[in-house]
Length: 282
Image (cartoon, rainbow, N blue to C red; front, side):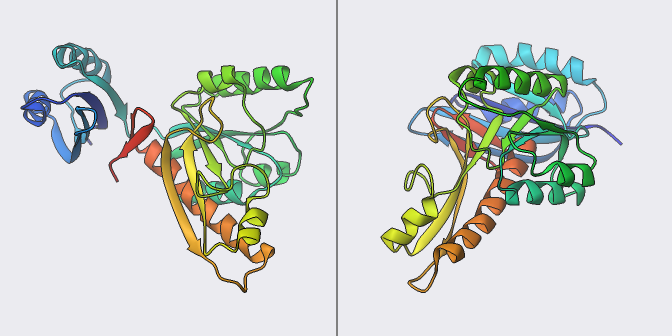
């Protein structure tokens, strides 16, 4: 079987970009299986994702030749082999619905990830991790130990060569330094349809306001709390009969689904950053 690659790129828009990219691949016997592109008129940027097979060149040769090809176009591009699932580390606190959902989808072959470790500031899910044969690291976090805890977390993430870090209801605010270290590869699930109901107990806030929709937001982690580029959002309908417990249960289902979609798209290299926004080729 010819190896399959995903090429993602962005650059200032100009005539002939699709032709240039497809021509580059054709000259190297690359067979395009899937392609999508988008021109953002607000920024003048062009975005593209191409999945292709190529047996003529190694990944290293493709990378070096891509760099030469991209330079005249001021093109930022990344090449990924699809044979290797994305190495992933999950952070979680005391609510495990998103963690459990991700583990099940992973073992069912529904997510192209390789979950290498679970890190938690509580011990609640060590048995769940063991049932999936995933190493579990308990790292307690307090006001006085936060810096040391994050150093240990980063050591594990680096040791596992994690390409993706998922905050699956990890209820700790990351430091600016850690956000910088994980820039573009850390996804958080927020228990609200941002920007509404920030902070703690969003379903109590929603119940107090008598909302008719509750939601969840998956976004990239940045130093600006809950304001990173949004990857996916969804909502569920509610009415006056719903209790706080009903809203919480509905919200947990929505959170799990939204986070799973965000992880899937990221691990399939379908999400491209566009400033404070994202371009997603589903």
